[in-house]
Amino acid sequence: MTGATLPALDITDELVDAASKSKAWPFEEARKLIKRYEKSGFPQTVLFETGYGPSGLPHIGTFGEVARTTMVRTAFRLLTADKVVTRLLCFSDDMDGMRKIPDSVPDRAALEPYLHQPLTAVPNPFGGDHESFGHHNNAMLRRFLDTFGFDYEFASATDYYKSGKFDDVLMLAAERYDDIMKVMLPTLGEERRETYSPFLPISPKSGRVLYVPMLNVDAREGTITFEDEDGTETTIPVTGGHCKLQWKPDFGARWAALGVDFEMFGKDHGPNMAVYDRICSVLGGRPPEHFVYELFLDDQGQKISKSKGNGLTIDEWLAYAPTESLAYYMFLKPRTAKRLHFDVIPRAVDEYFQQLDALGRSDPGQRLQNPVWHIHSGNPPASGIPLSFSMLLNLVSASNAHDKETLWGFISNYDGELSPDNHPKLDELVGYAIRYFEDFVKPAKSFRAPSTQERAALEDLDRRLAALDEAADAETIQTEIFSVGKEHGYENLREWFKTLYQVLLGQDQGPRFGSFVALYGIDASRRLIASALDGKLQAG
Image (cartoon, rainbow, N blue to C red; front, top):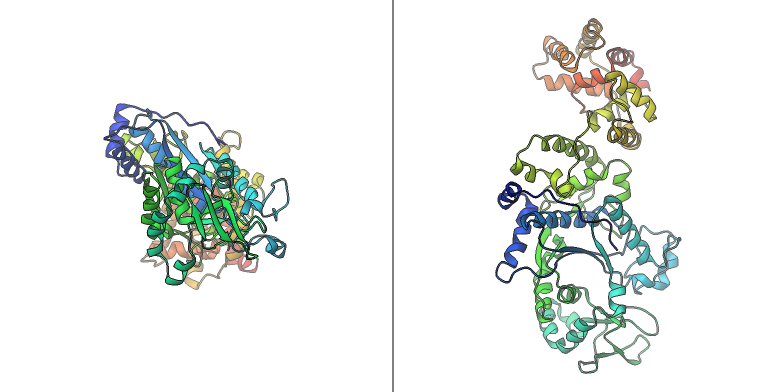
């Protein structure tokens, strides 16, 4: 399944030269792939792969892996002047047994009879048209990847095992069973060694994925013999989906079977990377180039987990911000652990648009350092937005706007040339800002009464605003605000602005206040000050 066609790249000698020198991490990873084939020449296709464990609902970390791999793929395409065929395979390990029931599913008790069955054999707890829990979660991942426009092919472990695509490597694994065991046994505890097998048979009787020792491995016949759950000695083929491989051998076997050239994974896989590589080599493959990224954390600093459902889901981020902001967050410092919670969204939105504005003023070298170039696969949009997301949030806060029409009334008064029709991206952000404010900003707002000194300063600010023309620009207003702060004894003007935020907006931080007043309107800002002095903001 393909989500989109591969976008065209703007390729010039100058840009290719800049790419060869760029220190942006996708180019550094792409250069490893070029070095990989500098002696032998490139194969017919260079294969990028990402893995997905559909044991729970897809989370943003899953999307991040595909987004980041796409960035490396784009960098590789530019460095090779797009003369090498590339593919991105998104592989779902949906034949894994359901070892525990995720906290995020409804009616958990209904799934208990299906514990340890392959995820594609577990009934779909969410209802709908998808035939299993695994199919449902796969569909959720594909839906988002398609929405974002990724060029990819989706692969299901269940399909690959059952269709015979892995039969050759499974037969080879039976033939080289002892060699695989030599790789695996030193990595296991003493008790685990006694029962370990790289093959996981699927019980013909219970349908469960079994973690049992092998009584016999017949390489010639391509069969394994084991004791089933009821004590019967059972022999099944290693091919045709009758068994699967343990997750560490499965990694290496998949790389060998498919000829994977590049795969990134989280830090939790880092200690096993050498094992994956050795299994791949035992099975006749060449280990791919790797990139190990840091894990995402929730608001408590804990690793996000699909089964726990902590952190953010894809849909939750997209309820409050555009997809570009999510991709921007994925680009930043992938080797550094980052919190993935609702409070990171506004900054990610604003920084994305700041980078988009900067892109048009950049030379080729700077363009390739800019996250926006990588986010949009070398084809960024032409322009940004005239108002920041944080400014829109503060406008919602001050105006108590509950709908886009009210907020657009203030925006149109500020600049009559702005409208939802000629600035659809701004209109999109207006909707996000209202939703984000209602759910996260409003519940945390806490207005305080001004002190005697602050009251005098606010009264002075009100008089100065009254003397200005209603159409005064942001710089003129900002100058007056600075003057009031200085004249009322604020040696550190940050404290003066903190006062404005706390007393007028009910928060510790806020926008450039002159710009906010220009947008909100001088008369409306004076009414806001009057409400604060009368104690109405605290009461409301």
